[in-house]
Image 1 (cartoon, rainbow, N blue to C red):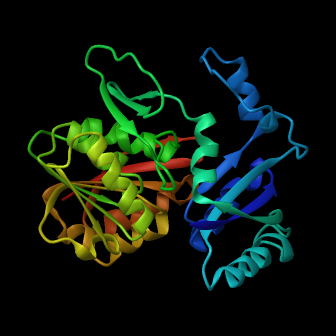
Image 2: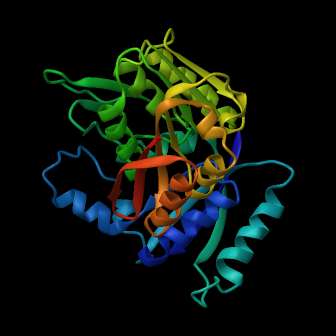
Length: 314
């Protein structure tokens, strides 16, 4: 399958705006290259076997955000929309353009392989270890190891929003519960919930690649009997009430599900809603909407520019 890579040269200060814009236009995958991060990794205590010199020696001094779109009949219109929003017109509120746009045609295999140089085993929370399938890892006592190959799907476990969701699941999942994972991406949160003792997990995504990759990772981790994956729009394809709903999407979609009542009708009376993908300046707004619709805020955690809000139905 052919994909179009849209590369945006921008700055750290504008990263959040560019990322949000790309989500709004339907990006199917994102990679962010920041030379400062790579240099920091070189100086850290972590044992990195290899870092591509090209990532350090790139000519551009800011950051590079790469978005990926399937090549289809509408791709040229989408690229024009991105050029208008990123490099041609001043962004509302800041009075300047967000960056410079270039495009390249790539094949799925090329992209799926290229980012692996960044991805190493990582421990999250108390016991969860996310291990790429191609890496070796010697687990410790009590470790719950999740084997993962994200392929073209979202969700390596290394993004702040995913980390916070995993930590919340570790705190709130109890044996025997039903968990819904809305926007399941690579299936990582569904697998974590199953490994933590959920009796049943249902993941939902609208993207065919995410559905396929989720099912592959679920099989890889041996939880096929516990986790089901459905294609559909958010909670629309689900029947019944879950004990926990976890959704790592974007704040606007989260608020939409809260306001239209689909979260409430899909939870048991004291069910827990774990919502992430929320930018920091939208936390108060999301919390307000949750409270207005019958939820009590249990906790709100922030890592860098992102937040995760855990709430319970009152």
